[in-house]
Length: 337
Image (cartoon, rainbow, N blue to C red; front, side):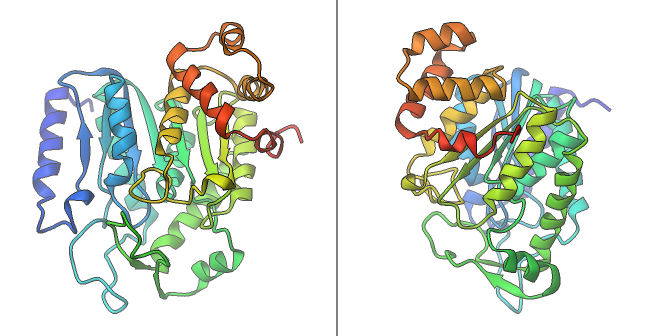
């Protein structure tokens, strides 16, 4: 059943009304919508990370809005609610992955009323959900942006604990600046995302995904980079218009990479990457070629002309590569190896 844009606007207003300040932990957790009074060529649906909130995608959302796209950043189920949450009274995070899946499918239908093409993106577990959506509904997704997707923990012991222990866990950085979400959770609430990650890793071996950008960081101590690389290898074999980018350890970009408020002093690099991918039609092979030629000091105009690149996005991407890119990150995930 199609939803008209007028009805969509009413739905968004109702969402904001339901997210009253007393109900939410703080204003940062409120759903964020950057909307024009008309349908745009593209619409972005962004999914925040586990125990966090829509504030994580505000800089990227505004960047795409300023590019002329509608943007939806909804608060996920069980997140951002006020309460005296602790070990004895953990936050009410879902322990059934279907709750999240139904949630993103509902928002996909809403997004489709606001743009001709849907771009879905997510951080951490939000990236896992975005990857699932891109594999399950590739015909409805124009691009998928996976930022530090949770496909497994960096430490196998933690994955093992996730599968067997019904305990409460507090984040080691729970008092870090910019942390507006929950400080802890019961492991079952994260366990469901580990199972989803295992499912989509198998699914990616035989199914064609929507074109996918995966952004990782060497300084990320939370998730498994090897599993991210393995997942990308299977994705790009089926979908060549996919990119992988890993930030060098020297930039100190940690898991929460979307904003300066959290762990990333280089949030503009994430924005440049995302915009370049969404506005480009380069394959992974062409992206590799561009990166190597930039690293070798080749004149940008030659690369732009030969690869038929969009001027603004690709010029920013080229400048970023010149300063921050290491070609070793290309070789370690070559799908042919």
